[in-house]
View (cartoon, rainbow, N blue to C red):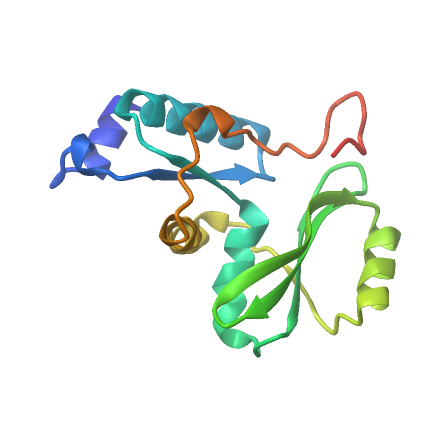
Length: 169
């Protein structure tokens, strides 16, 4: 991993970084865990803020330019055991306003929320979410501009589902 990180930042020095951002999930347990541990370790050692950004928010941000101001934007991701992850946002300018944050849903409960809110279209995440890395940086940058400086120790993964309690949020 050390070599990969070195290749990632060849023309800069680590000390030039002002902050880091990491996808907090939902997603593959192993991917979320490795990403979170790596980001927390780097932020701790570099003494810089660490933004944790929802995987669903990154995907939603990738759709902002296709939406109208004020539009509701619902995004989902498959989970295991017949559940799904879902989040609901409203578009204000080019910002996402969280109306219902990342949660594990039974499909029928999610559909009921969408009907209650009058959501016209639900967007399902693609299989390869690495394409939303620019949106991760956009969301972190927006928070940075608002003055947020989250401490690395506050960074927590969102796994959404526990092996023993499938509806834990």
